[in-house]
Image (cartoon, rainbow, N blue to C red):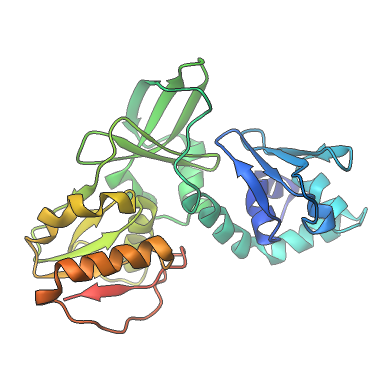
Length: 293
């Protein structure tokens, strides 16, 4: 791994990999308990500026970029050791880079009730395509078919851009390395490929990962209809769409919310459903593949 590659990894993904407790986080900053003492302190003293990807530890009185952090954490002055350490964990850190945002609540900046959408256009921004292909390992042809890039400004005049995914209610789900939020109206997203079976996901990144895995394996990925909840709170909004199908395959997250939603789904369609044992899903989000047929 090169210095520039290491600097591009979000520091919060490194901290999550190291299992350092995060006390609080919004789309601008995250606060962690002292990572150099294994997170053993009562009050979080280490701040990570998410947008600039730099840190400062008030308890240690020092800060810097990812390289500075790992030099301190690994207790070394040897840059090669730091790069080797990061290189050996490159794939793991990429995985944590995904999950740290997938598990965070949709966020907005403090005291900013409104946004102004400046433009929405086809994917082309190199920063966003690199994020999708290099970080999230998404096939760009698939991403371009279902996503766009959005430019927007907050009420405080701060400008941002991100990958966006439209829902059926006219709102947008946004993802980038420093951002996860929704704009306008929350809703489900349905994709109708004129099929009798539907595959269910919680987030659009799960959908894109699933399609990418299918394509890489030489398998068809347009042989089913799809539904993305965009939040498990939208589950009941998807029931009318589900009722048009003969079978439902669920790739909801293997966490409390995902399991609860699956049980609700099973109860709603139990007359035509029976339990099956499924293999662990491989969408890169730690999910379990559950099915209703």
